[in-house]
Image (tube, each protein chain N blue to C red):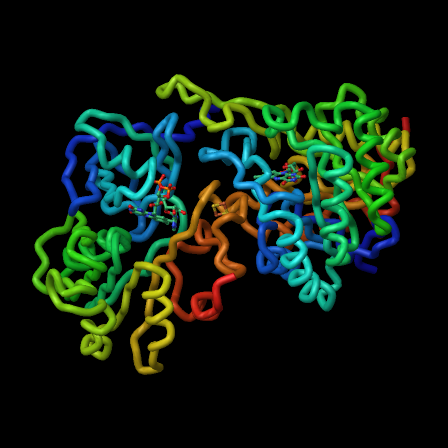
Length: 310
Length: 245
Ligand SMILES: Cc1cc2nc3c(=O)[nH]c(=O)nc-3n(C[C@H](O)[C@H](O)[C@H](O)COP(=O)(O)OP(=O)(O)OC[C@H]3O[C@@H](n4cnc5c(N)ncnc54)[C@H](O)[C@@H]3O)c2cc1C
Ligand SMILES: Cc1cc2nc3c(=O)[nH]c(=O)nc-3n(C[C@H](O)[C@H](O)[C@H](O)COP(=O)(O)O)c2cc1C
Ligand code: FES
């Protein structure tokens, strides 16, 4: 029998574990649907806030030797407009059997709750609560994901405002990510996406003699993040029995399998779309199947969290 | 491993274009397909996409409409410019009879295609249009045997728009190449007839990454930076004709 890539994510069945990560492609219904057609098991929209935002000036996204650095600055059309985008996407995603994850963010717990209410009309399968963006600190202060009480306060507010599945997006920068996750779980989270970008980091152009990003600093993603993401997912899933979308530097079937072994139920893919576009989803599926055949793995459930042992 | 994100080049020549622009010849090379673009950064100002009007040496033509383009158009010989790329997909190899249609500053995106085709002995008929002669930008070109200018107000060249002026040429060409304001491209899509040769257009969108990651340049499900900026007209007809959001 050929191995199966199907997974269960908080009671949702995904045909395969690959999830388009927030902020990659997901500004429009058409691009979300395109990623779904190309083989994503679920797709995440760009994070939206109650009020529209233009984001930071360019340069905002740069490729470097270890992956990407970005300070897009959470540009988005506002949650009311985003709901229309999500509704349009959902119409096409349902017949494809691909789940929609709607990402929101805010500046206070109440602000998050309001954004949650605004996008609720689109009935996403999961609401992802981004409390971990590292590149808007000059405006919003430190992310809620760095501190258990702050993470719990946002989770509680969203939980009260929204009846569906709530996933909290964790930061690799937390001093103790398990404590943050435990506080959010206690406050009513149904699962986690781990992790957001690392940092912030900085790139300097030696001829310009200054940081390249207009925001000076930005979140680090891609290969450089992978070992850190694996550790975060391992620690969170070992301590807390909630599902995790393991995200950070996944660019191969091997990396996706590592995420599952670390304890992830699904696997986010973002920076790996660089250069390859949505073809990354079918390649990763093929590579995962080859590994499963080779290693005699029939289902991903069989290996989920196997790295916790020992 | 070096990051090598930008190549730094210096301006060796600055040619004013119309009232509101300039062509900058730089001291570097970036081999490219005609229609590909670079992200151009001036530290402390902005970073934006620009078509390579030539690749050897790198040449940019800018219409000064905002902070970055005004700063670029005002650069003196010797000033430095930071570039990453080339990015995107350019035009497929052209045939022998090219009809080139440029609206506003869009013609910059077609200059390299036209010049290379001419050098290979193809015939190129070019129509460039603008709203008034003030806005007309003539990028850095070789000598044109068949260059027709049009202005909407008749202040220079033929009075009317590019599509009207070029109407007779559609049957002659074996490829049509257009770049310009979206209403012009939409008009082209609307008037497209089945007996026309293949039509290629160059789209512009606001870009952030330029490398197919952020999604901000999307046109329907297409990413202009990675799938384009050159598209076959048929690929994007639905998007061009869709009512604006
Ligand atoms: C693939 C590509 C190739 C291009 N090639 C050239 C070129 O060769 N020469 C040239 O002069 N320009 C070109 N452009 C357009 C150029 O990027 C914009 O003129 C530039 O972004 C303006 O920057 P600014 O800071 O001067 O003005 P801004 O303040 O950024 O813009 C001024 C106005 O133009 C609008 N605008 C900005 N960028 C775009 C865009 N990409 N598409 C449509 N409207 C925009 C803004 O909304 C604003 O209203 C190209 C664009 C793309 C996508
Ligand atoms: C350009 C870019 C924009 C992003 N925007 C968001 C966002 O709006 N919300 C969010 O929760 N994460 C955002 N992220 C983080 C990704 O969703 C993901 O967590 C991170 O990039 C790690 O995964 P990767 O290494 O596969 O890219 C963004 C990442 C990038 C590269
Ligand atoms: S500019 Fe980022 S995807 Fe095109």
